[in-house]
Image (cartoon, rainbow, N blue to C red; front, side, top):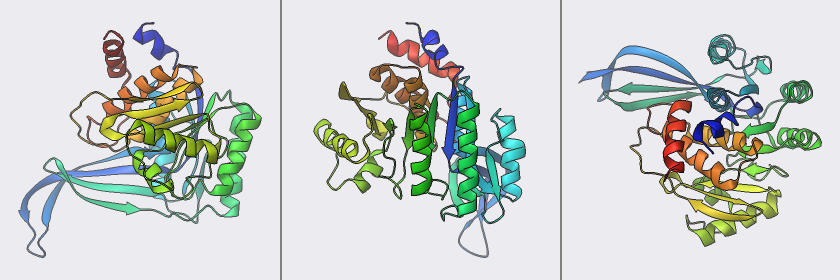
Length: 329
């Protein structure tokens, strides 16, 4: 099958993403001197840019492959929350009806100061406590509405441990999806790692599985098989995907398992690569692709975004070109 037809089968799908949204803010400038006030560089500010981060970056990747992204989340009813709702999400053609703004929370913003082609400083603004009962009820109402009123083909839970996906919220959302026969793909973090019971695809990275498994995990087949068996016993998931950084990824389903190496690349920034991988894997799952093709697409897309500075989404033209090359060799 041709690369363009494979990617065309990923297009036109409806995907619901639930999780922590954030703004990745970049302040760029130049350093030419050290401050007389303290031994720190003085950055002469030249440019500011806001990009979608977290679950919003997952949605951005879905849209980049010509599918429809519905985003359910909670942000602060503050200036940054309104920037998300009124500017960044509409610019990216991402529906904003399911974004709840809360007066009791701050929007998550990661501000990076960049100068002379390197990151000098990162400042995080966030609230990480679980949603209160009112916020959780509003979020679950939006999830239920979207599942009942849009032709959702796959649901992605994107957890950054910023409070949107509490253990109880996770359980209720999975129950909603399972009751409607909708597959669920998960990109977990440590706090609720084993709360995602009954999902279809579970995608930790190597660091996350090492922190959560009661045994040592190495990027080797026998060890990863043990990790996958542990996750299946705890979660009952059908697919286990473990990303292994420069070593590629491990993927296991009911028919078998393999380690899929990634091509060597010049890495500029790994930020957002996990968002891209879960996006592509979920679309490929919805398209019914074979595990080998799911792994190939996920590797190519995740590697691609690492070649660009900052958090970026996958580029379809590059993905098609690299997929064509991979299929012909």
